[in-house]
Length: 269
Image 1: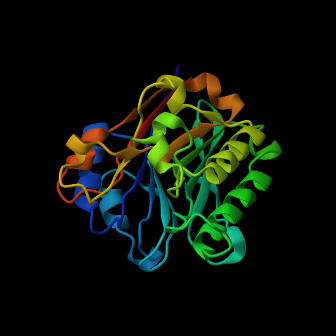
Image 2 (image 1 turned 90 degrees about the horizontal axis):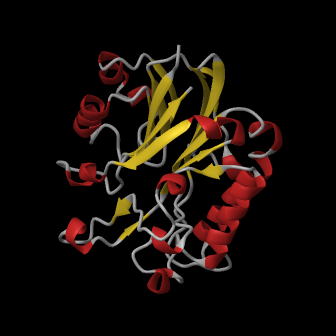
Image 3 (image 1 turned 180 degrees about the vertical axis):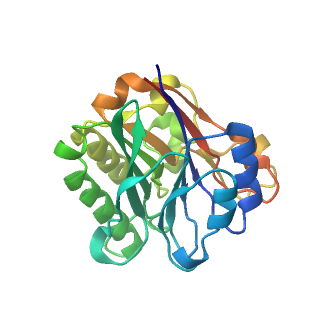
């Protein structure tokens, strides 16, 4: 008997504020696993009751008051939960757990990579230095044993690596999230670990692909000045099981939206 697993990753920009649209997502998409970033919520105040009522009994939560925060919610059991403190600064930016899929333990990494501030210079901008150091630690860790097993890495990784992952490659080359120092390190993290960028497997490189649109635009959809900041990577052993990805663009237009759209990934055995 075949197994199918539907996973959604979404920077929700405050889970308590946007719980109504999370519930809309659950109703419309019915994912098995939901990976949220920027929950902005200490663990004690996380809306567990609402998720349990929606069928998500299993939770791996790593939050803090007002900032950052990641949470993985699942209809399937979660085991071997891990919360890694990157750069030893106490930020809640990662949680991992094993999810049963086709008789195996699928490792799910949920990340919220630092945005990096406004100035792409580590010498004058500590936030940018933190972002680069964070990714360097990802590279050192997420290879070898971590990628020799079925694994998926998702989240708001805050880098738009390719030319058509941004609305204007030339205009954004000096803008944080698309600078060469970031995109080259980002690709180094991915390739060193043998991770596959599955969103680009299903959307050709020459096509525009966005997951984030700024709140600043009066009409975000018409202006369409987006960036692909949210990603789905899989390890080589999981590669044959990825059946599709989709950006739920319409969610960016829901009531009181996040500035990110959810990304859906479907796995089949």
